[in-house]
Length: 152
Image (cartoon, rainbow, N blue to C red):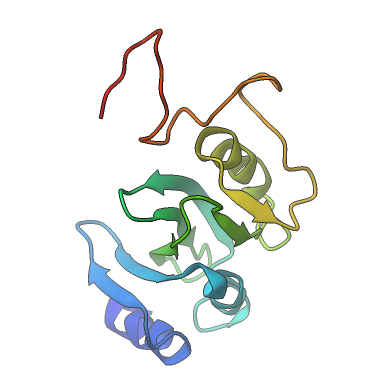
């Protein structure tokens, strides 16, 4: 499926999606509450068959947070980036997709650990890199680090 067809496919399912052609991948930004439905469709539909989540990360923007999913179809050999926009910075939550993509289990734990984004229904959401008594989320722009004095 070429990028124009993929764009139409996504817009038919999520009309409010914001889609741009990035330098490497087609990128679609959608509301976080629709992430599970669109990723399920992208994986299960034979036209798209996105069977591989090869990267997942968090992004902290001044007004919102995002979870970014890089997907590939190993059979159809196309790729897409889906960005889930989370409007609540105080209580960022999104549905887990680790039952759809096994690679998401540790990616989501890392995002939780460093950004504080809660993945609802994750089977083992706990810190992955930092100690259990760590306070705060070091990748957030509002994180205060008096030792290393990182300022944004």
